Amino acid sequence: MTPLTGKYFLPEWRCPVVRGRYCSLPSRRTGSPVFLSSLSPHRPLRYAVLGAGFAGLSVVWHLLKHSPKELNLCIDIYDEVGVGGGASGVSGGLLHPYSPKVKLLWQGAECWKESLKLLSIAEVALASEESNSEIGESGERFGQFVVRRRGILRPATNVKSLDALNENAQNCLSSCRIETIGKDAAQGLLPNICVPLNTAFYMPSAVNVNPQRYLRGLFLACKTLVKEFSTIGFGGKEFYLHQKSVSNLLELEGEYDVVIICMGAKADILPELSGKLPLRTCRGVIAHLQLPNNIEEDYPDHGPSILSDAWLSVQGNRSLLMGSTWEWKSRNSSPNVLADEATKALKELLPKASAVYPGIKDWSFTGARAGLRAMPPLTPNGSIPLLGCVNDLVGKTHTCKYWLFGGLGSRGLLYHAWLGKLLAQAVLSRNERIIPSELTSWKNIKQ
Image (cartoon, rainbow, N blue to C red; front, side, top):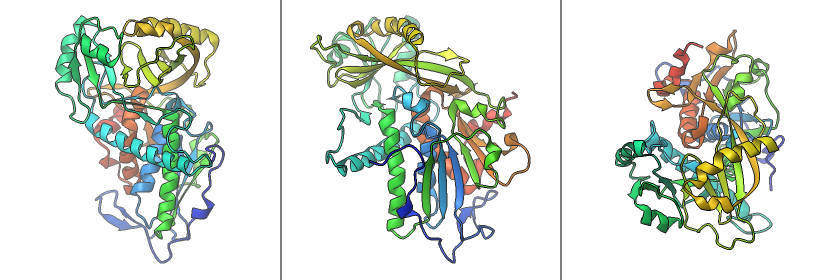
């Protein structure tokens, strides 16, 4: 199995130059094609993507997918902790297009559609690799999944918000419908669930995702796409993974045509961007729980995950994730959780979870992980991520084009696919204006 750490190189797919051709890309001003005759046909365009989480791998996939077939393109991915080693890999993985009050989020339909596409692509890539491995078994060899399709249940617990919940549920997407159900129906899905107001909101099409396996699958999908280009005679695509950090953007100057910053909360430590981004940091702890061996009754196979003041993400019949805490202004990006921090998280989360699922008290704590989120500013459209060209922020004269994809916050899994596609198209066309203004308006916020 190909390791996902260190420098990733595709020597058999390192392609010859496309002789006698020039790359065709849309004009920045008009959007119509121009021929980049100033580019040497003897070298590829070189892009650096900083970060190998949801944002970074989504951008890489879409750059490879949407770039002209004849374009020679080399992408270097930099991440000191490898694929999914940061906050993305610690995500609880609950995916749906709604707010806590089940209101459809800004551009939720498009985000939902594109996320499901990328999940499917990653599943196929991972299944193909595992079916070709020495074990010869596809799917969940280690009892793990990429996507668990059992829905998500949201019991109503607050009289004040019940009217809003009922109203919002009426405006759901047909592709991710919300069913308003009573206590008996809820307990039919999950015995012993507590429904204090006799109303729960069930999203049967919502899913929970194993972020580590998903990101591995998406990385493998990029690898497969490069190979497919080579097979059909367009071999000018290659990419590398470097397990190293980039501490200064200008150290990349002269080496790359484009640098795309997908570093999450760590973007602010770059000296060129420090103090210039309207991001708040928040550390979240997620607890891992397991049913003890002396308890025979498993979590039901068809049982949904649970959303409430604390959420429960089902990993298997005897394994759950419970989250998440919110430690604002933290700068601690380590995924490791010390004993004191874990104890504090359990004291905060268990009462909230047991209020809707009392059986959680019988589960045993087996460990905890944490991620440092980069939270975007609140806008009239909600808290939405930051996209755009940041040459003006980087400052000085430079030949490289710098772009930012940041502020995914706690909804990175929902936003990453569509926004990665948008940013890739903007980078390839050299046209920031194709990005909706809601995603670039953060530049108008005075720091």
